[in-house]
Length: 321
Image (cartoon, rainbow, N blue to C red; front, side):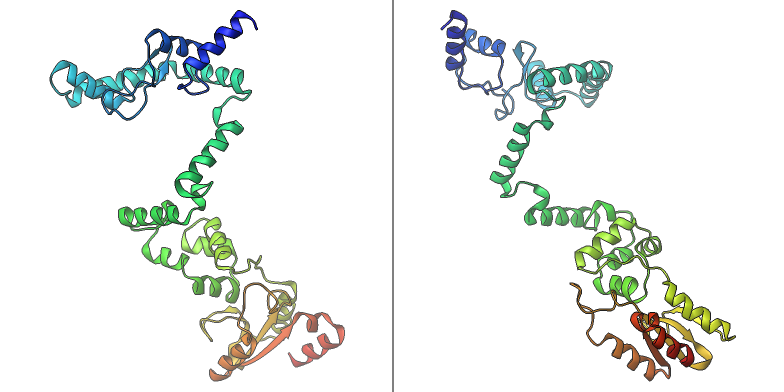
């Protein structure tokens, strides 16, 4: 074993209490000053002092440094003097910001092969380990207790559960959290996600997130070609018709209503009106709509996609219309 390797080994063993990433200069400094433990902040007596450019910092933070200055001068620092020191440090940092960041990047590349310590596998593992030890989850956002604390804090301070809701009225927030309202708007009234978002004054991603959370299947709602054909056929007969009627059997929806004839047509796509989806539609939905329509004196015809597309049954429906 060479002398250099022997001395390095002795140095590391003598300063084994230091973090594993501590450099040679820090280890030599510790031996020279006969330190046997990491130096702690003399003010708070909790946090460890930071190693910077060949020496340990006097305190662990700016807050503690202000207290240290006060204790040395024998009188408390005034707000003006504290603000002056803070401004001086901030200006100094701003002037040397690019230089500091570049130096940090170079050091990270030399030591870890990446330009930021947060991109190293070691850093990520440490974060996950710390989170597991403290909250029992690798990601704080996945922990139910953390989520509840965040909601409680937001409700206590601002009256809403999330930062994204701070600019919204209470009525809008209530509607966003209302499963029945979103189901009626999106599924019954066939409003698209962007349309609901625009009416409530929120981003479409907020509505999409809520629909997914409630288990409501998200559809790209637009007027289907078949529904357009039925509507055009009725109009060609010189009959006045209303599309997307939400009033007659509120809160439910009728695709096409002919008010003066007290007749309505509902076009049912096989996918969105089937019962084999994860989200459970009312199994008697079509019967329920027909019954509600009958009670208000409207005769409801329900046309299914396979019936309209089939040439034989299509002719039958055209003759009925």
